[in-house]
Length: 187
Image 1: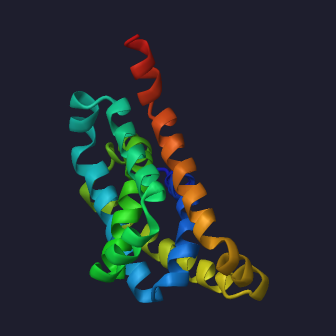
Image 2: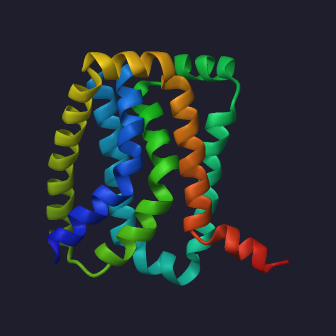
C-alpha cells in the first residue's frame, strides 16, 4: 500500500471542497459539519473499496460525470428556496449531501484504482488515517475562517463565492469525467 499516493489522492480530490468547508463552517456548527464530512468520506472510501471493480466494469467514468450537474443546480437555485431547505435539514445532512454531490465523482474515479487492490485490514487503516487527517484539516479551516480579514471577506462575498465554486466544480466534473467529450462524440 502506497501511503503517499493515498494522501496525495485525498488532498487532490478534496482540495476544492476545503473552500466549501470554510463556507459551511460559517453557517453551521463545527461538530455538525465535521460529522457530515466524515460520513461522506467514509461512504465514498467504502464504496471505492468494495465496488471498485464492479463500477469499473459496468459504469464508464463518463457516467459519473452526471454528478457534476448537482453542484451547478445547487448554485443556480433560488435563494429563497435555499433558505427554506436549510431550515428543514440538519447541518450534518446539508454537509453530507454537499460533499457527496461535489466530490463523489472525483473520489470514486481516483480512489477506485488506488483502493481496489488493498486488503480489508488496509482499508480500515486508510479510513482511520484519513479520518484523523480530515479532522485536522477541518480544524485548520475553522481557524482560518476566524481570521478577521478572511471572515470579513466571507461575510461580504461568501454567497457569491459559493455559487462560483459550485458552478466551477460542477463544470470541472462534467469535463474531467469525460461526459462532455462522450456527449460530443454522439454528434
